[in-house]
Length: 344
Image (cartoon, rainbow, N blue to C red):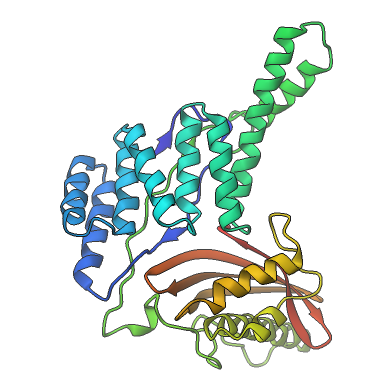
């Protein structure tokens, strides 16, 4: 699913959306069926099924998101833009529709609009790594336009051509190791809905307070002392991450904010106090919060560690599944978060 005319735009890695899910397996089948048709390139059939679904549930954000992807793949750029724009109005807390809008605008060479959409995505979620990377690419495209304009106005300016050549070389798809020259817009994966036989896999299950992740690798017995020490550190890091998720889910602000070290700098140029106030408003004001971590992977290097996992978040009608990375530093006997990012 390549987007044309976006030579300076990265391949998108949209976060998995699982919005407004209900406990009905029938709805999950509808999402899955539309997504399957989309992946198979049967766009007309996918559109018919999406429209039939939306005829009875017109506000459903998951199906509307899928419809926007279908419209884009059908070449109906204006309609896709309208769909994603309405999603940003109805669900302003979600960064993904803004990100998709940026791709569509970039495909039309409307780079100022693409920049504005990405800035909104980052404002909504300052740790959305994909939006930051895409915004850098948009700035590079705008810089290229400015340098070209400078050459038109002053062709004798010897300082401009090397700068322009550097940008072109950076995004040259023929260079080994460089990313593709066109952007890929990811479709929404099928929604995972609870089934009675497998409640532990639902996106609505909160992280238990003292239950280790089911994906924790068993520690082999008879390992050398150094390996035992590393395994112990890894377990401590994972326990710290699980405790952070539990504090979030139980709205324990003291424990949640206490999981972050003094070295933690919020993304988006926010001050620490502004970030804490924003987190307090977003957590305490919710009726219920569920946070579930899957596929937790921990690497430890001395007093530094990195934890990567899939995070399933749900609050009310909103549910989002995404890749999350936490960087931690050991202070005394505690592992504290010093950096976090989403979508990588």
